Length: 218
Ligand code: TMP
Image 1: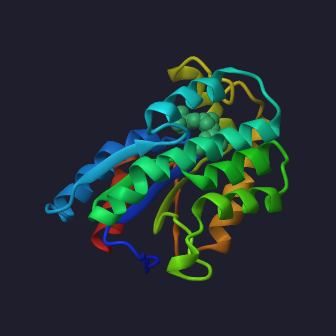
Image 2 (image 1 turned 180 degrees about the horizontal axis):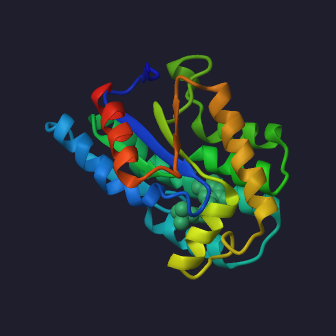
């Protein structure tokens, strides 16, 4: 496993997966491992949509209000722009380790895979918000490491229904989540240096040992 290099002194890691795949369960454990491995760095836990005051207001709209798919994509990227400008980029410049519960892979998975927007449309938004031409022709602010929690849409739905009240996305059907999952897997196969795909149907202890291996290789 070799992780993508980064221009900034900090490190950027994201957690991804369909709703119910279990990523949120593992973030606290993972961040503790990271803090132990890098005791001199500040570890910052954040999330999308959200992560800033404005981003959290946008999150409320995004998770509760019906809207056109393009509006949804634009608001996800509006939240991301604030997040990068206020939180992520300054933290990476300081040398902090940023762990985000979701980032742009969620937009490709949900808004393209799930809602059916075109990849090129999202590529344009990604370029607009995340490219830094002064740091290199193809440079994008993006995670060096993305942990993708992969689970069948059916099992994820069963897990969700036993643990929480559904938000707007979580009410969507198996077909939607199958498409979201497939888009995640497609992206992971296209960028094997950045993604670690974890079979989320395993016991928690097995997932924790995969996370330990990952952290030890950073
Ligand atoms: P969360 O509770 O895991 O943070 O989920 C937020 C929801 O927002 C989740 O259903 C996925 C969705 N989402 C998108 O559709 N596009 C995005 O770009 C992001 C960041 C989240």
